[in-house]
Amino acid sequence: MKRGKGMKFVGDSRIPAERKPNIPKDYSEFPGKTEAFWPNFLLKEWMVGAVFLVGFLVLTIVHEPPLERMADPTDTGYIPLPDWYFLFLYQLLKYEYAAGPYTVVGAIIIPTIAFGALLLAPFLDRGPERRPFKRPVAVGLMLLAISATVFLTWQSVVTHDWAAAEEQGKIKEEADIDTSAEGYKIYQEQGCISCHGDNMQGGAAGPSLVDNGLSPEEIAKIAKEGKGEMPAGVFKGSDKELKELSKFISETTAK
Image (tube, rainbow, N blue to C red; front, side):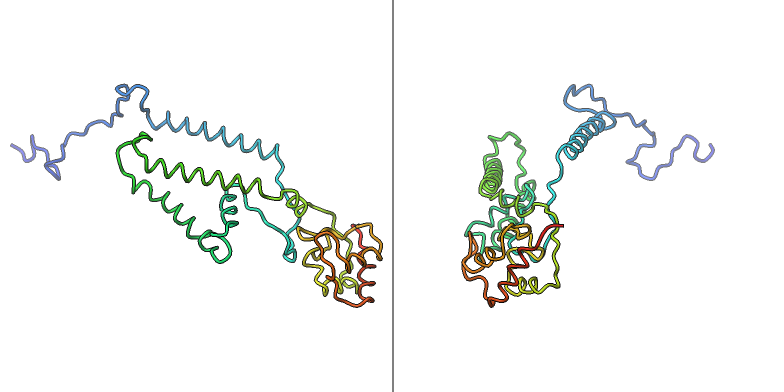
C-alpha cells in the first residue's frame, strides 16, 4: 500500500476534511419575520434614505436660510439663539438653579448625567423583556426625559422675543460713515458704540441711527433727556461735543 492511499491528513481531528458548500439559510421557515440582508434589507434601507434625502433637498430649496447681517463683535446687545435642537439646553440655563453661580450645573453636570445615562442604558437595563409595561423604570425615565426636552423647548419658543431677534439680525444697507470725522470719534468716546454698533445700524440694545430723519437739535435733546429704553444723562461730554455729535448723526445716511 502506497503511503497516504485511503488516508486524509488534517491539521486538527475536530475539523472535518469534507468541505460543505456555503448554502444560505432557508428563510422560508420564518415567513414575514426575517429576510436576507443582501439585497432585500439593504435595498429597502437605500430607498428610505433616498426619500429622506430628496425631501431634505426640497426643503432647502423651498425655505431660504434665515441669514442675518454680518457678525459685529462690538455689538454687545446682540442676543444669539441656538438651533432648535439645543433650545431645551438654552432654556435650562435661564433658570436660577442652572444659571449665574450655578451655570456649571446647567451647562455641564445635568447634560452629562442625562446623556451619560442614555449611553449606559443598554448596559444597565439588560433584561430580556421588551414590552414597555414590563420595564417600568426604563420606560418611565425615558418618558421623563422626553417630556422635559419637549417642555423646555416649548418654553424657549414661547418666551423668546422673536420681534427683537428679527430686528437685531435684519440685513440693512451699509451706512456711509466717515470714521475719521470728529463726530465719529465723539461717538466712540461716549460709548454710543456699545448700543448702536460701530456702523451705527443698531442692535438689540439700541435702534439704528442711520437715516433717522431727526434734526441735530432733536438728537441733542434725546442724548440729554433720553428716550424709550435710553436713560437720561447718557452723554457726558461738553456742549460743543454734543453739537458735533448731533450734526454727525443727523447727516449719516445709507449708501
